[in-house]
Image 1 (cartoon, rainbow, N blue to C red):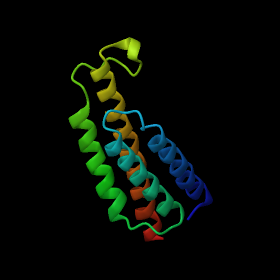
Image 2: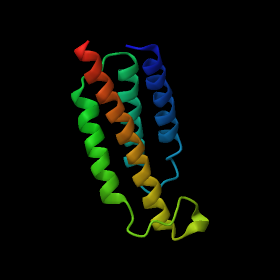
Image 3: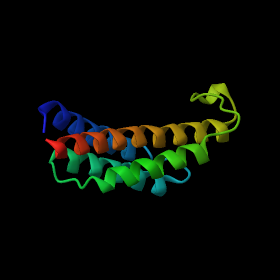
Length: 117
């Protein structure tokens, strides 16, 4: 695998791990800690070239569905000064899932491409 993609995998391992760490004060923190730790594990496995292509594919699709479901109908931004706390919280959570989805789909396309070589 290209060294750039290894670095990307390690970078997202760190970023998703930090994402899990900052969830401690969230009302539903356990759910989001698990989600971000799972994304960190997928990223680590990708960087170590131990990832089955099916895992990021399914994870990416599931997270995108979660994004669509959680996305608030009246998105008001990410800052608490922008609107209702519940709407802002849903916006943050949904975009977190979108980021995980995009990263997982990047891994899927890279694994697919490297398996043809």
